[in-house]
Each structure stands twice: as structure tokens, then as C-alpha cells.
Length: 133
Length: 66
Picture: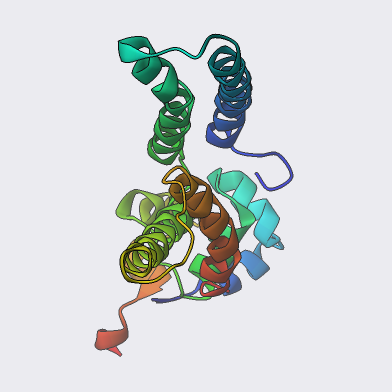
């Protein structure tokens, strides 16, 4: 199974990239609409949250991958990595939240939480795997 | 959990990749189970036992029972 990736991973990749494409297109479209038409009222709120929808899709796609992965060891590594990433990012967000409240540090947009989770998830995976060598 | 996978595999001249292929799991899974760092689920343990024509008890050793 090594050289060829698991069916679950292939399915994940097949779902991931089109969703990312939708995300990029949505961001570009929403930015353009805001610059051109300065929407307001309900439409403004609706357009503002549109780019979040593909990201929710990515989260769901990851969840599907975890549930579809047949290799129990790989699944364990993925789940442990996601728990580490969740813990680390929650801890960082909590620290940063208090720093924002009491010090002049810059405000971080909340959508960076997801990006940070992905980065930490990628970084901790090899470390989690190493525990099983 | 200690096990005799490495010995049984060597008797058959199978590499970790060969065993992984037969079990339809990754080579890392085989390695992690073989080194005793990852305990397989019961269904996978049964598949291993069937593949080596033995029993789970013959394949795995409960550390407490030593």
C-alpha cells in the first residue's frame, strides 16, 4: 500500500482541491464586489461570510477522510495530530486573546485560527509518527 | 504489545512491505505493530493470525502474562 496512497487519501485530495479552488474564487469575487459595489445591510453580511463556507467544507472533508481511512495506524496518527494541533492552537489563541485585551499587540483576524491549525497539524504529524518507530 | 511478527515474517521471507500488501495496510502500520509500539485492533489481529495460520495468543504476548 505504500507507494500508492490509500483510497481515502485519494478521495480526500479529489475533494480538497476543487473546494480550495472554490475558496480562492469566492475570496476574489467577494473582494471585487466589496471594492466595486460597497454592499451594505444584509447583503454585506451574507457576502462577508461566503469565503468561510468552502473552509467549512475543508473541515468536513478532513472529517470524512478520518472516518473513511481504513488503515487504523494512519487514522490514529491523523487523529492524534489533529488533537495536538487543536490543543496548541487553542492555547495560542487563548494567550493571544488576553494579550490583545491588555497589551498593544496587533489584532489577529480570527480566520487565521484555521490556517494556524493546518500549519501545526502538518508540523506535528512527523513527530507523532516518530513515537511509533 | 510484544509479538512474534518479525520471526514469522522472516520464516516466510516476507518484507514489511510484503506483509503490508497482504494485510492491505501501510508499511508504517506493520512496522509500528512489529515494534510493539502500536496495538492493532481485534479485527486486524485476527487477520494477522489467519495470515500466519496461528492464533492471536500465539502471535501476541500480553506483557502482564510474562
